[in-house]
Length: 364
Image (cartoon, helix red, strand yellow):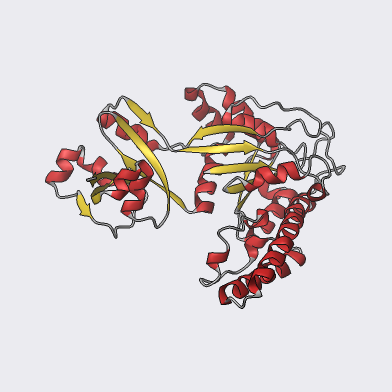
């Protein structure tokens, strides 16, 4: 999973990026301190790995990972080259989903490019730049496809009709992700890669004084309403607090979060929301060599999941020996689980479930 962190300049993007990745991206109180996108990889917290590691004592424990990309702040006119312009719109095109950081705090000591914070306006500014970029791209695509469709090819004619349907939505100022797509149209979306079609997770960046009380923050309410209207995900975090958490030792973080009245860190909230947004789950593999989590799309069948480990596993798939994590822990060991008949043999049509502990059998 590759998430691109976007937003206006000085909304807390790089502060949040530094905190969740500890990658040391430059962070300063002026626009465009991020020029080349910074990239950091983060382990997905998963308590199941800790428990399984105690059971197996493996040489390695490998969690699933997420790649975060800190993309420079966009401004109005970016699609026409304003600010740092199209270069950064291109960076957004490469990510799986957008983490849109929105400033939801007032601070006269932190410059805002539009004068003061206004969550709805700021979200609209970014969304419109993505829409404008998509309109420009789609105009060229429609023209090219229309020329090819002069032959009378029914598929190409249907493709043009679909593109014009999206264009109508974009020209109305709405993102491509709001377009309802039926099964016959889905084939035309694969190569489009429209910016405004990417799933969005809104992150309301609040001040530390609003922690536990953000329901009274007017900016947060705006973020929540906009996310609901788009069927997007949203979370509220304090980038400054996340920075403090990142500076603590692992054993100090739980106490710090408890003192703040928080059940989980902002990073945990973002990762959980990212998994929901993209429809992801994790399955687990265990052994003396390694205990590992693998991220897959919900609904994936066993052979395709095996292919995430190695292409040979998919090509020569025979069966999957599967047990749920909860059953394995309850049994106390794999040997005991097999004696109780808790390990199932699943074939090519088995749909993987979150928390499946799997051994793939294959032959090539």
